[in-house]
Length: 587
Ligand code: NOJ
Image 1: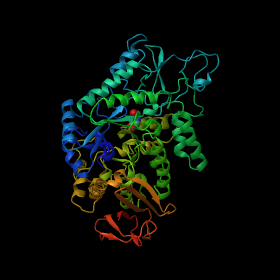
Image 2: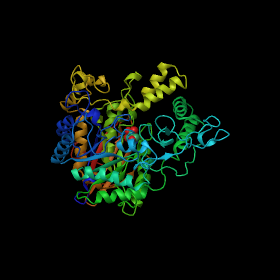
Image 3: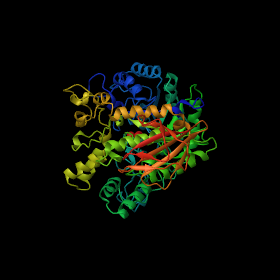
Image 4: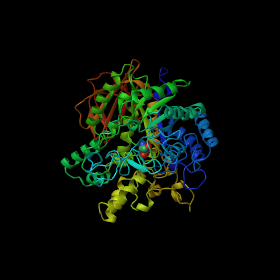
């Protein structure tokens, strides 16, 4: 295993700082809390940490609207607290990567305040500014025909993916600025070399301090179509969201999907990203210690030749299903690994089943009957797949989505905006609007981590209001303390399974080869190194299975998991319990 880089052998864990651990008892997570929990994370078996944004931010998008790239949000602590956290993580053999948001800043960032102040200030060209569309005798189709005759309007009909039109007018300049996300998140103009220099300076600020790399936020949106080609979807964002919510037939669902694609296809993937990623890669490569870049994108092209752009991109296609099935996983692996292997320097995979933007893994892939068994099966899958795994905080104790039915309590402004649009524009009845907004809000998967069976789940003291409601199921065993003391808990299963991956070199770096490819109830594959051959069999069904793998080898195998089984296993008769897991070494 010594040939591999640290990020290839690591198991990553995403910390959502606002919700992870509250060290000062104000209802918001912070660095003191995170530092205190490092031993817990070490005990879990993770050795890479991805920290969602910890920078100063007005929090329109929960930290993804950064107002200072070289500082720490005061509610999380100080730069000294950050350094203490970093050093404490390193001292425990854990690496730390930060979230680097390149596409946009906060509209309260000093760069934007200066840029918007006039057309001729030194930062006038740091953001994407455009003149209003010239007055036209007829309503102009470029802006969707939505502007009254003779009036000037936005440069085109593009929509922000969070809150209505993608263009916001600034009277000081008499111009519009572009924002792919909220209007509080203006897009930087990456065609301006000064922007690059400033952002690389910010990256160096953290690299100099010793951070081990970055997760690159929303990189596909950095460059848009320079011709500003309008979209052709006959709806606004709110209408499309609503259309998707009420779509029931397969045709409607398909149409909604097509509309989503068509609405934004001109707003991402514009020319220039490869050069930009190569530049950023050069910055990282100036540092010792194999600093790493992982992109919030599934496009393998952004890995360049496999060694000159991003080190990894996420295997998001694996997640794009309502149910993980053997067929689904096999098809995903065939496609992804073929493409990774085709890169000149051979690409490295990266798998995850959840993060702060989507339903929690247990909610999303559970069936409400076998949730606990499925959670274990899905972790076993992640820990045995080829590619670096990423976990999301709270999944190890089986945290589930908590839909917040009261719009006043929502903190995800994309959901509050949708709620307002439903009520005011689409005239949806308030109770239904609240339900729809709660269900689409990302707050449901960002609630505070449940540490104990105590008020507020032990996240913050009794009497303090946490920034988001705590899921009351902490009182029903979904908390760290209760599970630490239960050898059969999900938490202890996570610990065992993470250790299995760590201790089994073929699972980390072995080749993948599907076996029994037609099986519908179970997924079986081999992970192979010259010195170790491992067979993984995962029963995705609620049935007991008796399987024969003598087509692979006639000699017996050694069981790695479950460890309580007899050491020698006959491949002629493998018994798998419903949702059972077998990891064995072929001898
Ligand atoms: C992706 C992040 O994961 C998400 O939380 C955020 O809202 C957008 N990028 C905008 O930064």
